[in-house]
Length: 161
Image 1: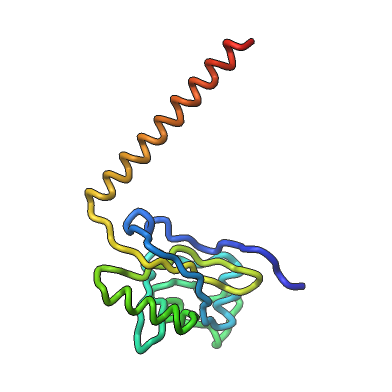
Image 2: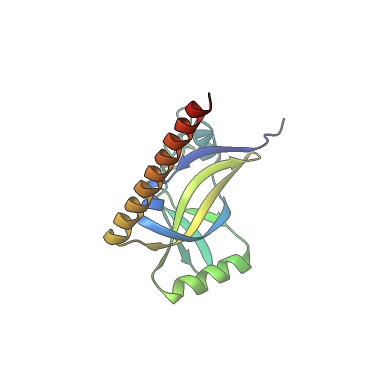
């Protein structure tokens, strides 16, 4: 029976805090059998992961997939470099954008899509400390506005009774 839908394995929540996401790509990941089995158990960490473009190919580095518990001598190395599968045109476009300067390739999430492991890769620009503070201030302001609207709506609902 073939799996349907998406199942998130791991997310890099800090990436959206540390980077401004300019563009996202869905890529496949070249994995070994024991890596897939370990991922099916929901075990992976994107904390130190990043992607690089070397010799016209995109590589995912720093992704930690723990060894499969029931694996034998065929088990994989937890932090090995893994190849990301993308179309040639997408890779060429990425190379051009990265060479413009100041941009990084950051994995945002790792998930199963119809039984295949996919990685959401972001073309991102690093945020400065003051950018992070302004984002937090905007988020707090939006939260306060939503609370005020909520209070006003509740007040009106009571008046109508």
